[in-house]
Image (cartoon, rainbow, N blue to C red; front, top):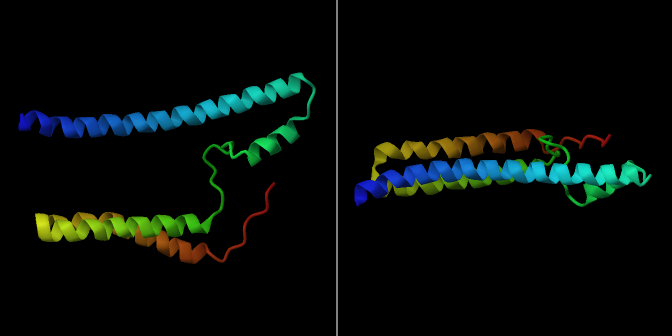
Amino acid sequence: MEGILAMMIPIAAIVLGIGLGFYGAYLRHRAYVERKNLIEKAIEKGLDPKDLIKELGEMKIDHNWGHRTYEPARYLKTALILMGVGIGLALPLYFAVNPDVAWWSALPFFIGLAHLIYYFLIRNRKKPRPE
């Protein structure tokens, strides 16, 4: 029984990880299609689509498709979370499991450190003007 369970855990993790990725892509696509249909209906009724697009932007519908907004605080948040995960993994791995595998916790820690350095480099930049 333990052998079957040991095999099912990684398989389930892989399937769920891929499934969540596809689900996120589906949700983004569905929001895009809904937005496109709404704009088409507005054009058919003779309304100005620019006003509608402005309202849709205020409703927080993601219409940038991969272009992230300029928010330095996002990098700080990511840095602190990743560094916390790295430290949180280091202590139990070193003391409870095996000191030889504790170095794996350095990966999220140093990725978080890179985000922190990037945050300090860009925090005083001015926001780009919207087009």
